[in-house]
Amino acid sequence: MSSTTTEGPSGNADWEAGPKEGLKDAASPPLLLLPDAENNARKDKGLPPRWHYLPRSPGLGANAAGDPVFSLTLVLERQPAPDEASVTPLIRQGVLNFEAALTLDPPVLETLTAATLNEYQPIFARRAVFGLWRQGDDDTALASVTATGSGAKAAFSVTLTRDDTLEVLAALQGEECDLSVQADVTFGVVRDDQKVRLFGYWAEAYDFLEERLPPSGPMTLVDLRGHFAAMLTERVLTVYQTVNGRENVADAPDPDILSPVFLRLSSVILNRETAERDSQDTENLYTLRAR
Image (cartoon, rainbow, N blue to C red; front, side, top):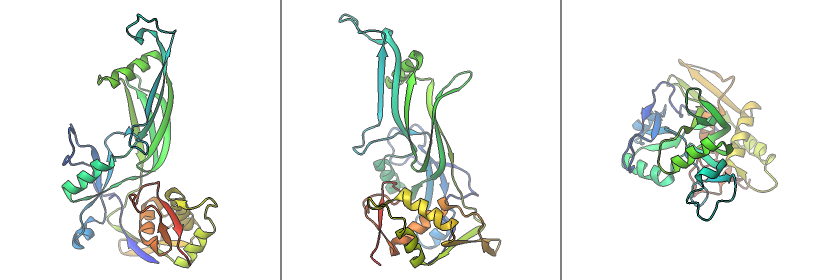
């Protein structure tokens, strides 16, 4: 196996606001975009431009049925009387459960791809710190959750004061709210003046993965990314980096940048059992081919 690549978000480009084609009721562009470092080469090959994206703000995560993951439980001072029209005066606190996600709904992404004739990939977050914040003179974090991966998701379970509970109820009515969800994302980039070559032997990669097959069945995409990082650390695979025309062994190769290249080539030894899913979907499952 030997593959040379400079694929990944460009470290030489500025963020661009995402296009609005095909997006209904979009008051502002929904995405922040970085071009792929290989876009010039892709153009020469007749391939469409590739963009790496983050949503402009976290959205609600969805379950397998596509329903938002969100619930608000109200804790009251007492049982409401039959003649009380509203329980609002009785609210003591609330329990808020929801999932925040750096994803786009698949239909929106499909429409955007068709409208612009470009490719879009979610940025792989090495670390995404989600926070539920109360805005004011001294912004306060009510809760914080850390996640990783493409389309990173974070599950929150927060006990709210009466005032914060009322803020959430106001937001559900479409009113302004002093609570917000934010995400601080760390990710890898590729500089246009460098190339990276991944070298190794498929037989050795096969043996390495075979020893780590879970007894319960296929490997997940998260498992496979972890095993790929371990192959780099243990030098089962070697990364050569070319900067200004000079090639050397990379001391600390970035597995987040290189794992998509390995996954694209790994069909030699791996079956993706969930071919109906997007290649970056963390729910993908993999098995080793027969040797």
